[in-house]
Amino acid sequence: MDLVTDHSTDGAVGKSSRKKISVFGLGYVGLPVSAAFAARGFEVIGVDVDASVVNVINSGQAHIVEPDLDMLVQAAVSAGKLRATLKPEPADVFIIAVPTPFKEGNKPDLAYVEQATAMIAPLLKKRDLIVLESTSPVGTTEQICAWIGEQRPDLTMPDPNREKSDIHIAHCPERVLPGSVLRELVDNDRIVGGISPQCAEAAAELYQAFVKGEMYLTNARTAELAKLVENAFRDVNIAFANELSLICEKLNINVWELIDLANRHPRVNILKPGPGVGGHCIAVDPWFIIAVAEGQTKIIRAAREVNDAKPAMVFNKVKVAASRLRQPVIACLGLSYKADIDDMRESPALHIVERLAREKIGEILVVEPNIRRLPPSLVDFSHERRSELQPALNSADIIVLLVDHRQFKRVDRELLNLRIVVDTRGLWR
Image (cartoon, rainbow, N blue to C red; front, side, top):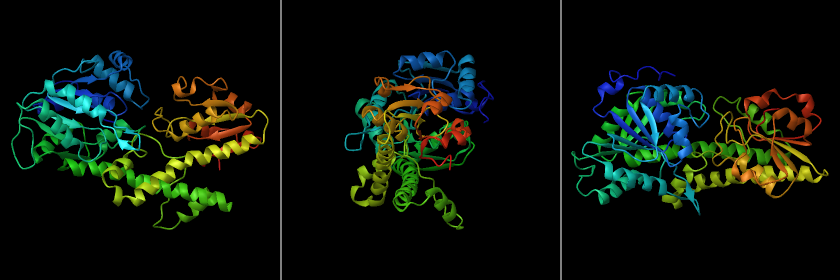
């Protein structure tokens, strides 16, 4: 990672006419992006609705688990280049990195994007740049343009058929992997889609301050769909692996051995199955495509349904095993949606543990090394508690591996031989 290099205005910021950046949303994308720009000498103001997040960042710490992020935030805050606030302030660049969840019926919810836009609009001046980083349905960047146009009729909005405008608006979707965010922010290629070509060029110039990957300029709608397609592609391939696990379960075949053998073919690369698909990207983005192209997304929808159904299959497997025991103790290993992070958004592991607790399947011991306390959805169950790894393994009748954290790889195999094991990740095969 090559970010903590230059906090002076003689560095990357000196090459830009835009020197003050405001980032809306200081989560898993917004905070690393803020720190990356601050490390290159920009004055960065992070805006968040959570006062505790603001206080933690202003103390020079990161409120999320991500390698090297604490160090980068501390350096930026100490240098006076990064501060967090609850109240928006004027800037030269406004980056929107707020959540874009879905609501009932798996329909996109743009409420947070709309709220951020409403806060930005009164602060705008001529030549300002707005960048949407949040993964969003096709047409969202154009919708931001429309919302601002309604609030600020005094400003000329960008138009693909007009070269000049008072402000620039673009979409530059994040394409990072949790656990490697800072490295991938720098090294990955970036897609930059503008409302107009001039908007795309302005955004690309900004991100070149720290991005070493190639910049690929396009229009906003194509950039939006490109990000969604990347994650839908992954979702379809994971669904194939998950469906194979169901087939192998029925036929009494070891799915891990099967995949290893099939992958010996030079043009076959089957992914590994798991307890489902989580995170804010792969588990969510395909629905954004389905929402705007319902009749053309049969494979994408089928993949979503396969992956969404997998947690129930794991739950049922644990329930059947527990039904054979009197007062079973169940150790559930992992709550996050992938290994070695603390992010539990849309996590199938969390959904499985919640259901086990809700239906009182047994005494639940939760082992999650990347969090300090259980999430709110689990704290009210008297038959469930957080545990360290070894005590949980010693006490358990059933061990359910839900996330392949590195700590779990060192578990004593002899101990496992004395327990009922449900290994959803193939870690102990």
